[in-house]
Length: 173
Image 1 (cartoon, rainbow, N blue to C red):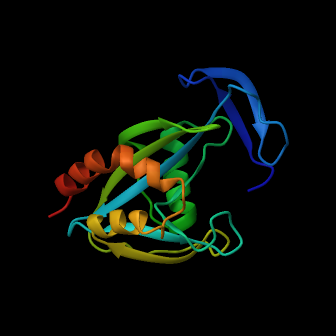
Image 2: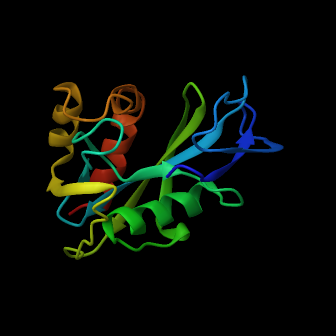
């Protein structure tokens, strides 16, 4: 959301002791903020995908729940918060496993995976998400390849897809 305050880091994720307010012009050159995402896997091997609200960047595109870390938050805390806010799925920071980190233009993107039991009830935030679906991991990859996921997800899944697939499989049935 505009007005969020983000901690800035260098390319190695070391805090710079500075902040940037989302939406302000002139993001500092050479600085990054942390963006975190969680791929939620059920015991039956299905993963949660959410569809971005029509008013957001990359409108109506699919993704895994994600968002920026707020000032003072760790990447894991941000991932857990975003998952709860966007989809209503509650997990703890100890329940997620880091898949990897990817440096993007102004963000250090961290992807996590979390296993959940059963079929958790979802509560979608309509300002963030307009739809959700539990799909197979190959279907998530197909959506990325077909241009149905938000554009940033293509290089993310190219980089993390094999490891993420292994972690999803190890948490499923």
